[in-house]
Amino acid sequence: MATQAYDVINRINKQEKYSVFIADDELTKQLCYKLRYDVFASELGAELKNLETGIDKDRFDDHCQHVVVYDNNTSELVATTRLLDNAGREKTGMFYSETEFNLDNILNSDAKFMEVGRTCIHPAYRRGAVLALLWHGIAGEIISKNIDYLIGCASIPVSNGEKYITSVMKNIYKYYYAPKSLRVEPLVPLRLCLDEPQPDNVILPTLLKGYLRQGALICGNPYWDAAFGVADVFVLLESSQISNRYTKHFINNKV
Image 1 (spheres, rainbow, N blue to C red):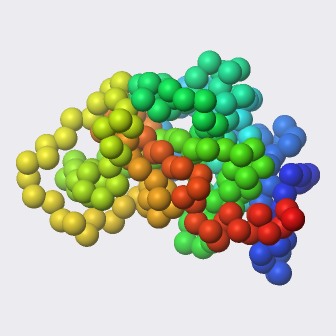
Image 2: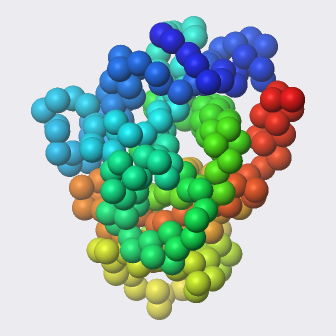
């Protein structure tokens, strides 16, 4: 399996258990789509349009970069996320997030955006460092392309019930909500009952918590994604807010 652009783990993990790279061949991309299918459709029950193919691929994928985490010991692709920048958006006509939200307040500048999406991790690797490795891969692309903002959708599972979603959103409104000038509108709003008291110590979904730890803002109310059975919130993350442990690593290795 070919690697290119950068191999983060060879610099930060002397044991070289994992490799992190951008998929640059069709076989590796197909493995990304297969992992996404296994996680989203087989495990989580998403109603994908191409269920009969055994892969999760949409019209955006051919114009995205696909970050991969690869287990060198088992020769298995264990995590992936895709990135779509401004140049890719020119080819697709929109970011994926624009299928769920009105982004007029966000995309009203000449800033360089990079959308993160379809992030998934093999279930056997969710308790380890793999999510952090994906962040390393994303950080490398931020620096190499001088990206100003990361954007994307983070999901809240509805399987935990309306009270859980409401608790998550109340926590967001209190600590992580964007100012009005950066608000977005969901095209299919998820209606919530916010009148009942909710606990402050709610456990946030892992990916959403990862965004918030980097300094992200949540820019509006959730979108009801019926196909994936989740409530999506729109995430805006200024690249300069990303933890120094990522940016310093790449800067130090580029000079």
